Image (cartoon, rainbow over all chains, first blue to last red; front, side, top):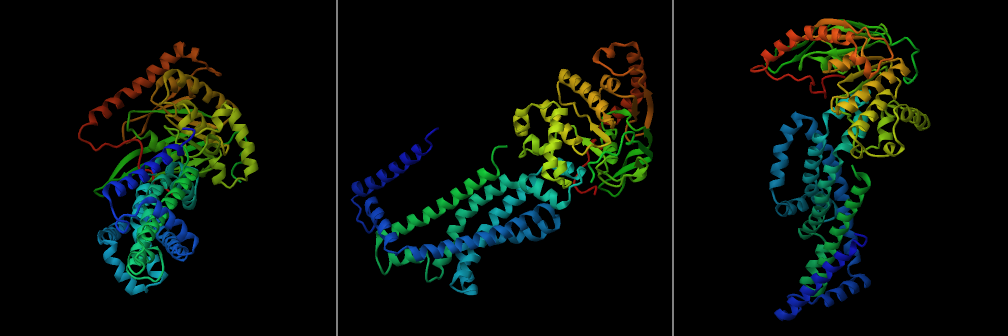
Length: 248
Length: 287
């Protein structure tokens, strides 16, 4: 495995070839499925002529803030769920119920409450990120070996020292599992939020490309951008995980 | 602040009418320690032996300040123990190393918690690594990369990090194979020789108890009382060969005799009664 990127490149090439084959063999018109080279060309031009950029920045800011808020609250709540039976009993029915309502159904309400600017998207991202990260944190904290905590107590560790030197490192692998799910959901949250009402963002561009602009290659280029944002966020989490969790 | 040596000759343990009971679900309580009186002079070394579930590990946890006695006191050098104490080093049955830390960082963990500056930690680490005969390659390795014996060596080094006057060991070598175990027993004696710490060793092995201890304390089936306090009349330094002495079989016979009835009691009680293990749920009870 001295060239781990080789299979990645091959798989991508295969994906493009199959796409092209479907277009050619199926005789599909470009407004149904544009060929890969058209999308690639439009992707590059849309980035270069500044079509994508403002929308991209808007969406990224929404995702970033939504992640900070959602993950922050989820870590605290997850710890509470793991360590307080009372909190777990009181909060978990609402958490599960809230999770059972599709974000698509919730988004218009949140836009109504928080306006169609940044705030509503941050809230939607935070809401959608919250559940998997909170549950992963709870599971992670619960999985921490009680015997290690006893060791800490025998060494006169303070509660804070136990948290930072035993509980958090012990829960980290699980928390990262939740983050992997969370960051990809954050992208979904931003797109859904913009769909429910916004003046700028990648989902707005998607709508424009499909509707008034009727620029189907641009639509695909935007979809590609959204997908790449998700992949990039996921990779950031993986790299962080390697750094912080490492070999055990 | 707490890593200072209190001076040779300290580390005397006094238990007076020590009682401990676990609260049970139905509001009653389950007595585990039933009035234990025991004195270990500074620098002494005693072994605790008793039937399974007799409360040996509970006794050790009360000694370590992890569990509060229901009645009675634990004193070290005359001062009552009310919580975990820097003068006490504790070694568990399993190594209990933090799996995400290297051996070095595990060994210096107590120093880190106590706020010892990094430079002093490095210095102490070197001493401990040498004392425990750890290979340089093992020092930088994670616990998962080490053998069971090396892990327990690291755990011992960690317990010695704060230069405790009292070392409590809860069946520390029971997971090791018989030959490795003998070697560790001898190393423990060497450590004891060097540090002069008072040692309390919980064990299931009569030969191990005889090889190591000045006195073997035999505990009854739960609730635990001291049923025999057997002197081991073997000169020091001891070697494995000493285990062939006639005095050893005499001592072993006395320990077995004291233990015999208690084993029968513990055995007869097994079915029906709720399983009470030696190891209580640790989190939350103490501190």
